[in-house]
Length: 273
Image (tube, rainbow, N blue to C red; front, top):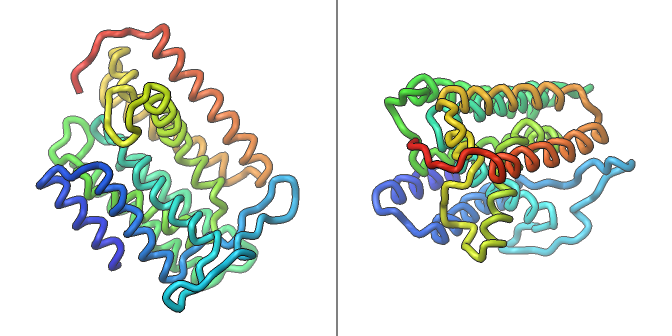
């Protein structure tokens, strides 16, 4: 609750004073650190080749709190989801729709264990609460939008990052259900770095901008993102750990190829949002 409140406060300050993206990023790390220092971490991930990758072997004490490699991975994951989802609000309804589908899939996946614990039930409920809040916002954000998400909307990405760890859901499930915006974010960061630009400063090179240039409507683009998240989320619920890894690789390849095709052969004229 404290970390989530801090996320919203930083967002409100940015909406009011247009904070530096570097300051916002530092705030993201601070918010994620609050949760991680409270005990939320990634202790291990399933190795698709067999066994697990343990992240608790290396540890040290900080202010009386045991910090492991999994703690740093949890911070990186939460900050990544916050920013990746924040970049996915280029058209009306795009971001809250992705959040609804992702939260529902994570909520369902957290209950698909042989033994259901109180923690699974709690985090599943929390996931569905995030889905409900996102759906309530979606009614007012779908084109033509009456309410627009400011930077404080990163609370949705923050909550998705946290519940995907707390619910013991394999991170591959969360990565897959948010596969299209994830690949778009990776592509964007790589493109900006190769162009010798800061990855923190925005531009009009995201996938939704390219689709707008192809004269797709805002509703069509939002529905495209929702349907892809739903399709990949359903796959994530049925695939094995190894299958999810191969699915993620396929998503990276096909979405990257799609983006490159639009950039090289698509319409070049700029369209208004």
